[in-house]
Amino acid sequence: MREYQIRNTADALAYMVDCTLATVSSMACLKSRKKCEFARQISIAQKGINWMKEMHVSDISNRAEEINKNYNGSVEKWTEQWTKEKESLNVE
Image: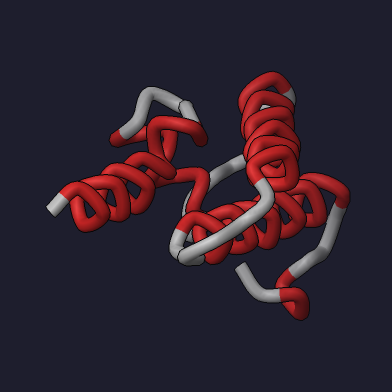
């Protein structure tokens, strides 16, 4: 979703969740990050996804769609695709 597509409060929530998920994915790829800030962003994104479900806000064309379909709605599980990869690179 793009900012110009926002027409109502549901769209605004979906947009904000998508932006937060973009921040989470960006932070997940960093070589070094503050763990507490990363956890905080994950928590904010998770709360947003939960609200989207509770309020029946569409997640189509949003990162939340992938999380709901492939990661059972868990932002933390979604981030493992990057954090596990980083751990395996550090082990070798």
